[in-house]
Each structure stands twice: as structure tokens, then as C-alpha cells.
Length: 78
Image (cartoon, rainbow, N blue to C red; front, side, top):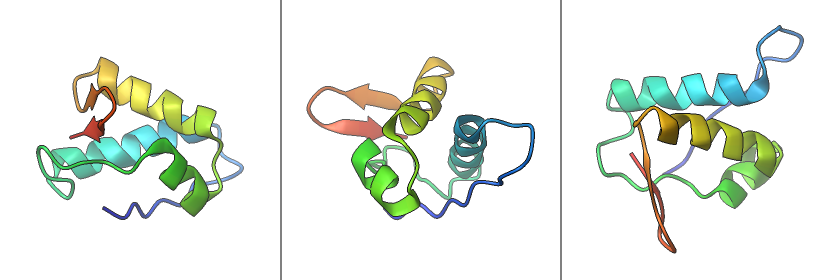
């Protein structure tokens, strides 16, 4: 899965929340299918230039709200 995300700089919303909202919308609209494996934190970091901490924060928010799940040694899934 390829993630296309471009953070908006100079606005009051943290980048991790922008990423969270972007991914949440794609999950809700089924652009990311149920059960689909999500890109790793490292892959997103390399493709977007975001820090791994920013991506971890977005994934944690998605996990907390039940949009994704984490399987140990396997990855994140919608």
C-alpha cells in the first residue's frame, strides 16, 4: 500500500493529527480496505520525511479509537 500524504505547514494543527485524520478518512471511505496491511512506520517516514515519533503518534491515536489494530511482529492493519 502506498500512502500519499502531504502535511500542511504553517497551520495550527499538529502534523501527527493531520496524518491521523488523513488515514482515518481513508479507512472510513474504504480507500484503505478492511484488513489491509498499512505501511510500516519506517516506510512512511522514508516516503514523507516525517519523524517516526510523528507517525507513531498518529498510529497510536488510530489504535486507541479502534480504526486499526497492531499484530506483533506483523504490522498494522485497518
